[in-house]
Length: 300
Image (tube, rainbow, N blue to C red; front, side, top):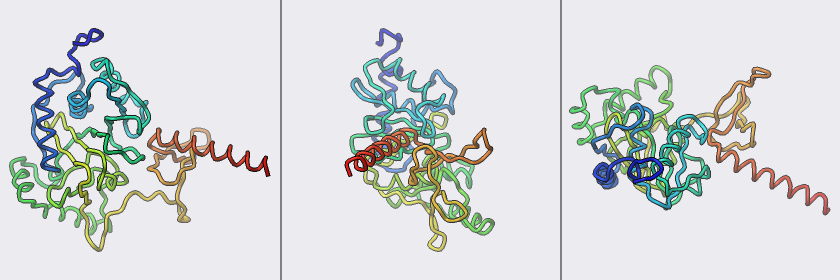
């Protein structure tokens, strides 16, 4: 029992945490399979990250380091509130904004730019866990389709996109096949982040509190976005009309996923790294390189 909050460590009772852990083990054993569990009531509305939070509270232990991000930011309302709640109910943990320092990362809508390690676990918040929802409203029928690996109707949906728009228009939640069998919904991460699941060194967990489902991509799994040979999968295009890769206005990086803003002073579009920790790191490296260049010029 935490003296500061009056709640058990991790807020949830031990029976609830044990059930979540058992569900996680089953999800790891069956990559991509949606494991049902008894999602508990949390002190926040469903749809605000209750599934991911239950995973985090069930897995975190004293001495661990947690990072919470929302669309790449550590300072958004969702990230700040979730982090504060975990700190209140788990008094013996540490929190960080640095990706490499975290042992457990809870995220909404993004996988960090920096490659994760084997010692890390990332928990993604999921609103809708089943990619077949767009083609089949019945959950019983969807279960049968998953069990038989029958994803023909999903492929037809992608084909219809190509016929209408000359390309697959799914911008996020891109259907991804895991280890050649189950197709999962990778949460509302952008297509840019989907390749990061392939052969990931870190364990990736998905928690849908409202839909009461947990699923996983174990380390070093095959993660293949479904597509067609003549219309291959591609990530977001961050190139201007001249074919030049857009760069972050803050750190100058040209490799990251960029958010688009409108400059209030001149009304022009400005692009900045979505992952703030990555942006800060690139900015630091850039300053160090500039200092080294000044030293070389001074000594020459």
